[in-house]
Image (tube, rainbow, N blue to C red; front, top):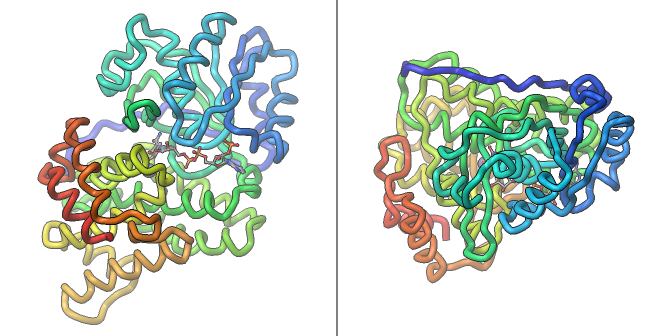
Length: 385
Ligand code: NZQ
Ligand code: ZN
């Protein structure tokens, strides 16, 4: 087991009607910037619940934070924060709105060029406005972590930063808010959570039983409840289990004491930046191919996953590993996320640009062993054509 430091100060209010808890989190004399996306919260009643809970509080709104939030959009919100002397940001939406709001919270307190926040990976952040969030799409875990992913649309750069200063002070998770998610976003949420777990699990064994068995239980939840959420969208317990699974998948708990990979995410972000695929659509393509490419190094954990999660007991080790990868691909396909680039009309001629972007972003030594280069990324994507 590896050494670790665990820190998670975010308070979670989970369950039916919890949006009302905003009353207890936000003092009446606050000046709050409520941030949201393209309007889903106005159609499903979340906006009305939030505004009712904020009665008496001074509210300024910033809408239009797009999926894969754009730097160009977020800087407009920073101006609004300064103009209205905002003292708390409330993000209402999915990972994009929460990530975008983390950037706004940091940029509002930063004196230099806001893009420094991204290029330094968050190291230049020494202060941020307090942030709270109401989650409407379980996927990223952003509601309870220190990460944010921002895209500069002008240059197709999708990059992340991390800082303890932007961890949400509180997160409100009412599973009922997810009933209106379209199937594509249900699938994205399940696949993203699945891959978050795997980025912290599918490396090499270090005998960290707590993180391993916790990861395996979360994977089982996704296998069980992911397809059910597509079939019966208003099943509360299914939605509730998926929601908390997504939060636990990336709130820092699973990485305790284990090596982590994150190469699938790094390659996936370039695919989104270049070709506009949804975040989870990229992950479903990259991860199975990466496992095939790295199956010798990952064999110990691939076998553990095959046996403990999928119940594969027949065949030699290589057969078990291949079966585990095939079953994972089938799961993604069942959810509605293809596992091949060709499903999005991408072919071999589109792959080199991914390697160029990885080099440009200094992502030249990826994976738990830091041995996945941009050339390896080309080989991995070639397996996923
Ligand atoms: O914009 P609105 O109108 O709200 O619609 C959104 C958006 O179109 C819609 N939606 C959200 N909740 C809904 C809903 N529609 C109906 N009913 C609801 N209850 O869903 C669409 C996608 O939303 P988005 O926030 O983009 O999705 P997601 O939560 O998957 O976030 C993806 C972003 O998070 C980043 C990704 O790279 C991507 O930019 N990630 C952030 C991470 C983090 N902070 O730790 C980790 C992840 O690996 C990921 O990279
Ligand atoms: Zn992700």
